[in-house]
View 1: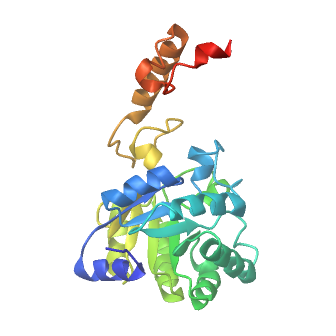
View 2 (view 1 turned 180 degrees about the vertical axis):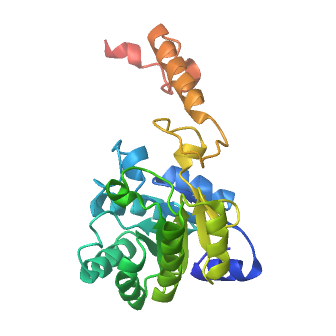
Length: 275
């Protein structure tokens, strides 16, 4: 069944959990969609796991459009959400609406995600008024990593926790259909989940959230530059891929591959006549 923003709202009402994963290419997104994932996020995390940047700040609108188009071609049932990259919405509300529109019109996204709390509520309001659903993102917001002084858990004191709770209520009021809670204490995430009517999507926020999201390269053991505490490894495909590449190199060098079953023959033996 096709997942939509209404699917998220109804799941919250029914107390049904939702599963979200990132994807950045056609083949991976197709497998996820066939597996029954509720939502695929084309995250600006592609800056880390696909492009090799140290953080997400260098990611551009063109990067996001390129990968969103690829994922959009692959899926039939998952809700497709795309991140708005750094400086695609911060300068002005006009920029926010224009770039959100590009991700939907050119990229094929069904909704967009942007980082920030009360300060981006005017942007959320304007984007939703343009009939584009918005997934909010509060707590640890990677685009603000330099302001935070690194990738640190947020809301660990009373003032910080209150700010995140207020941000959740503010983005809900602004019209967001859901909100990502990243790297916040589980007890705070549980309180927020009870306090808002929109689904909460946890990443490093405990199991009381209405949904969970992970970067797929993390959960499959493909990205090993660093592993956040909140990641569970469901497979270790990195070592398997490395061994497959090693075996391929060895067989090519030894002349074992390609074997006859991987080669083509002409219907008649005329090749010798060409000499």
